[in-house]
Length: 103
Image (cartoon, rainbow, N blue to C red; front, side, top):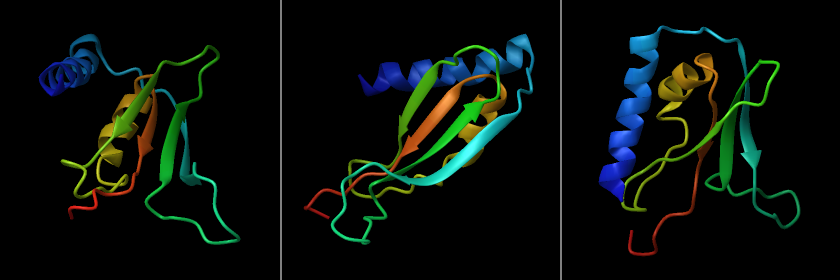
């Protein structure tokens, strides 16, 4: 499954270069908490960054769950990639998550 996802993402990245950049303007929303919190305390790992193209029609959404083997994660690492996709008209949610207890 990981192999197919990698191939798909590579194709998606190449698609924009083969067919030209659209250069959509986009809005960036960072550090959006998606988990219920107790009081004012927010879990910094359970947040997402959302990039939405400013188009007139609905944009497809790519849910990007970064990191490796659930042992490290930084939703900000792939923001250049996410910004390139948003400029091509694809909305991207870069999601942070809790880590494996084995870490």
